[in-house]
Image (cartoon, rainbow, N blue to C red; front, side):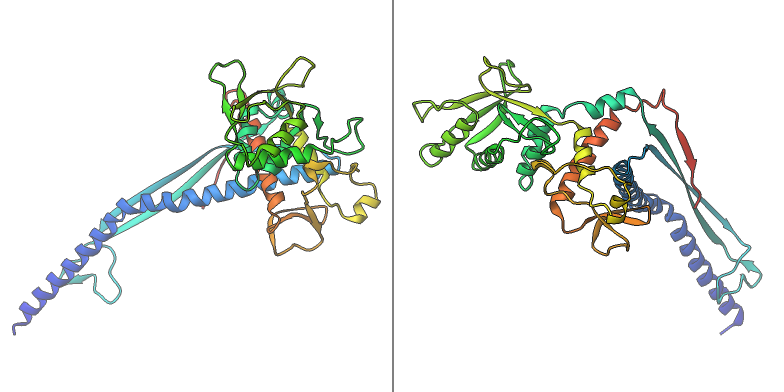
Length: 368
């Protein structure tokens, strides 16, 4: 066969191969962008979530030592992605010449660059303090009660009084004595709600925000409804086929108020309960480095933040402070559930208090 024909055929094959490679590179622009979102978004979200947890836990630990702490909120993340493509003749492919018979090969390049910029806003000011010290809103309490696994726990944590049933934070720090029947009330409330006998619904007449409606209880649950109402000092209707509608008040019960009066804790109350649940190192306690708390009341009895000289293996969340690791065990579902609630309420306080128009911000460009 003529050598010129062979060279011509080789040039055609290499040219077609090169064009295919260039098209693959250039078409990558259409998929690298979405891929960068799918990978980058998860990475940013995971890091922000983890560092926010660590920041809040460290703040709680430092305050147990009587020291101040501050928070920085991530207000924005701008990840600028740039793509550059080019075609040229100044490079060859491994194993191939840069030219065949004097004709240069066409090649392509794709450059990908990501430059994230993170903006922080300090969490401070009167509005933030007011948010922390305000009682947890009624609707958030009722939404927490709908939790299938933690409804009883969250109600006990958030509520400090129902009618005359008191549920103080600590046992001997207040003249208020815990009512021995509060836990039984929460147990009945949870059970009757799960079986569909008791529902908390909005009041269509808007006279009160919510009502507790008890229906379909006879005869299987009649005795428990009688006990439930008795704990609240309410009377059972004579006709058990009659629906029982009890107004819910976000207030302290007075003599002429018929219904269920509920008061809730504030986010700062929950932070203090969590702070008291830290098991501090004995050497720090003996040296007087930490704040001493009285025995925990019912809300914090199942919460544990453990301290260890060595970093534990089985942890859900951990921070290091004063040479010790303070952490939540990954198998401690109760403490984890309480921390999730605390963090949610804390974030609501932060989000409701930060105004980026007035607050100083710290913007950090990050290069990879």
